[in-house]
Length: 336
Ligand code: SF4
Image 1: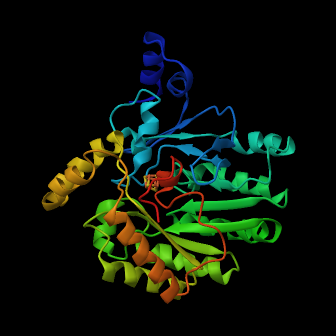
Image 2: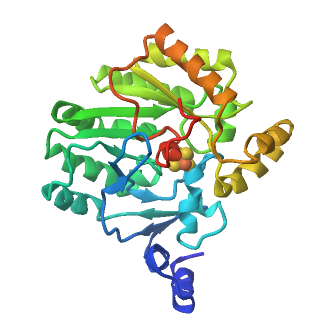
């Protein structure tokens, strides 16, 4: 469906707010399976509460994410735009082209600059669209004109190496860190879970390059999915690889599964891991968040790995989660 169809929808239905903006968004580019639109943003810094830190700022240069991770909970954000097919999240990408200009104005007005600013909390700031639109890069250029901020970037993408010059500059001027999400080092499993994201080996190589460039970088094992990437030997192997690559921290968070994410994830599970379907239904029957024995066990195990592999980074835990959205909602008891 192209731009015209969306405009027709806008004319026929009483869309409001972000749904209306999205319906009016001009098409920027079209590829076989993906359409890119220009979205008019009202602001770049969004104030967030995640329950652990009372307030902080988040920035998401794009709505939607082409990486298409099966567990991604942020798919619900397309529902705000009246898009109910969960796959639209990875097929209709909205680029906030004015984000850098808006940010400059917002920073000049001094919006509580002491609070942490996390880039990439709902969608990946270095997803494929960034290669063409360079919105994240322009945002970083704005930050490079300021100093003394608390900044972090969370991504699964190796495209971030394009901006190594800026990362180094930001590391000199701000409290700055990057959080690379690596959910498993099992390449086959990663391909199933995160079909269009760079391979774990590529991501760990990016960690190495960031560390060599003097940029603080941690590894986010997020989300941990029961029965899929939670085997102790797999987690230990991942911790060892992260440490060897130069990561300074290791963070983890157990999957939470909201109804919108479940709608996409459960059919995937039925197809690829049918033996786990009943377990997931049982685990997530009453709540999107796991509590009790399982997250506690994971938490303890990860704490042990951090000590064993020297991954107790002095920086605080990342505001943005590896599966970016996992920590933007009220922090759950499954977090570790
Ligand atoms: S989990 Fe992150 S990288 Fe994966 S689709 Fe969602 S936003 Fe993109």
